Every structure is written in C-alpha cells, then in structure tokens.
Image 1 (cartoon, rainbow over the protein chains, first blue to last red):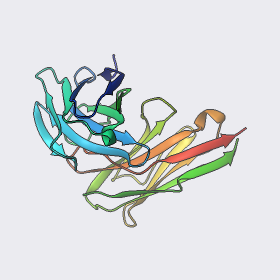
Image 2 (image 1 turned 90 degrees about the vertical axis):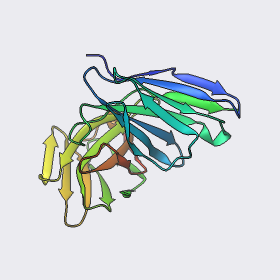
Image 3 (image 1 turned 180 degrees about the vertical axis):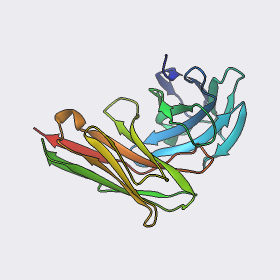
Image 4 (image 1 turned 30 degrees about the vertical axis):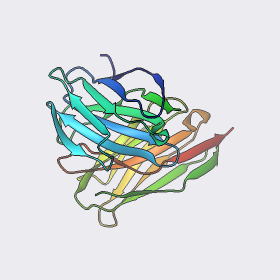
Length: 114
Length: 112
C-alpha cells in the first residue's frame, strides 16, 4: 500500500509569488490535514479536509488556503509569499474524520522563500 | 484550543538506559494521544498512541502512560539504542476531530 505522497519535495519561490503544494493520501483515507513545521514554532495545524469539505482551520492568515478533490487528493495554496512562510509543509492522511484513526505523514514539501 | 506542553526539550541518555518524555495537555475533551518520531530530514512517524479509555500501552521497548485526571501523558523508551536518537513529538486530539495539537518536540540523543 503506497504511503502519503507530497509533491514537489522542494520549492524555491520569491516573495510575493504564490505556490501550490499537492498531497495524495493513502488509498481509502478520506481525511487530509496540513501542518507547517518550523524550527521555532514546531508543528502547527493549518487545516483539515474531509470529503472535500474544510472541517477545521488553524490560526493562519487567509493567504493560506486549500481544497480537496473527490479522489481525496488535496492541494494547499499560499499566495503573496513572505519570507516567514519558509518551512516544511507536511500533510497527514487519516482513514476517517472523527479522530479515531491514526494520522500518517507524507515526506513534506520544503518551501524556501527568497 | 488545545495546548500541549512537552518537557524536557533535550534529553541525552547512555545507550541501554531509559528515556522518559512528559507532555501535558489543557483540553479535557482530548481523547487520543499519539507519539511521533522524526529523524533528521524525514517525515514524522507514528510510533505509539493511546486513547483515553486506557492508562498504559506497551510495544516492545516503548510504552506510553496516560493520567487523565492530571492531564499528562508520558513516553517511556527502555534499553535505548543509537537508532532511538531523534526528535519525539507528543500530540493531543480532541474528541471527534483530526486536528493534532503538537508539543514542541524533544531531541533525544543516545550516547553509545
């Protein structure tokens, strides 16, 4: 069974640009969550999607958005990039959306904003 | 929202000794507590978890204990080995939710 796949693995963008990251969950998993990991702040929750609906949202500005498709694949978009957006972005997939199932992480996308 | 505190931030142990990492949480509605291990440059990997209807769970050299009254849970690693060196994250998940609230992480260094 394939694990959680994130693309691309690495990205370098310029301030002001926008970026789209992709996450393919484990087959059969319907919940996808996104996290930002930085050395100073640790792992912070961005949002969760379940059955194409955003169920939870963390404390990030509106420049961070996402969506989920009918095949459970999810994308995350960051507009008007700032230097502080440089981070490892991780997605996690779970079987259901009720907090009963384990969350499995992808390898992440390393975003560098210059 | 849920707030998870993790202590200590760094822990060095001699190979073969035990390591204990403690976490506290604030939301009494949290009922699922996973632990993740993250090696340098790799993804966080789930190593053990515990649900609020259980006080202790073991898996080989790893165990987790939960005290719901005091709102704290701990990871215990016995007979540590060099490959146990990593950053360990605890997390708490409120009931009916997939939102993981993570602690800041604990760097464990096993000295051969």
